[in-house]
Length: 159
Image (cartoon, rainbow, N blue to C red; front, side, top):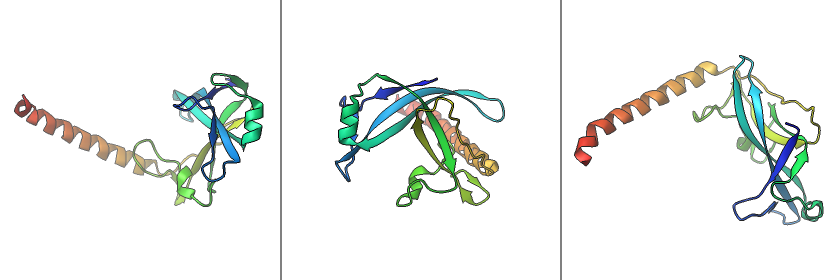
């Protein structure tokens, strides 16, 4: 897990150009990570991050799709927004629930970063609103079950 892979967009471009300032851009890198949470559950996770810089510097680096770079992609969580102009962009959301992870009433912000430091560790903040998240997950499962039941009842009408 000491290598990241340079990725291209759907058009094969390795360098993305900022729409706000064409002098700046980024290269997207990806890495598979094996994560074990504080309760001992292991899951595999595909991570991505951006290496940002001036376009001329990114071009000079001459990265190619599939090229491996030594380093890691780490997750950094914070109580401070990474982007003050658009703080909602980096809110930590609990799966597909739409619930913002919080400690008490304070939202958690989450972003991934590339670092050449292969010993860097994730900086995770454990949320305290697990009961709220479980309640929403339960409600979503109930709605899905009701939807499936309705579809089964209507199925003969579609044949």
